Length: 254
Image 1: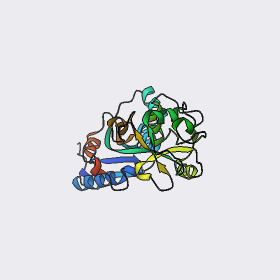
Image 2: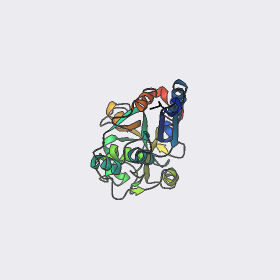
Image 3: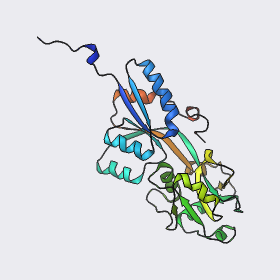
Image 4: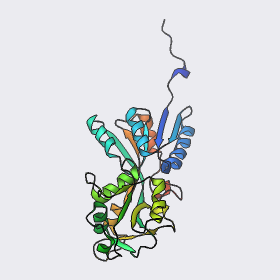
């Protein structure tokens, strides 16, 4: 005689979300609401960087990758080689801002000139109307979301940053910039401090920083990534995560 399985043996929804701290508040809040709405369900949220998040997703140890910025090149290559199908949902955007030493006489820079600086074709401040001196590029590794987003904004996905660009950690970047009068780097807009000077970025001519082209070029997505087809459970949870400026807490979005 066949017996039915007890109700306790039925698998309850369990979701693993891993990734960037910028998305922790909104995903944790969505997890709490989801578990209240779905008795017995569990949602585990683990903090890590974008690389950790995407590797976890591709290895099957996470259902959702919480990603800040653009996907690193080696991860994109793995996705192509394995012919994986992924889907992402943009939660919000963060603004990226170029920064220099406070003593730098420049206050603004054209977008095309900024891109030329990081590509290496402009390598002296004199070429931008500043004081003579070699431009020192301080950049984060493209293996991380912000570093990859800035690289793509400056030289495109397949382009190369200037050979003289110096790769530094996110933790050391601003400290090094405050010690180098010829340095230039980039931060998220909400990371600006009095220790560095933000450069206003303009389009060619006199268009302001709010011009559509500049704004779209210097913004970085914050997004959730899943494999396709995602399970109904994961899709249901994703639908409960709010989008837009109100989604992220003060101090997280620009």
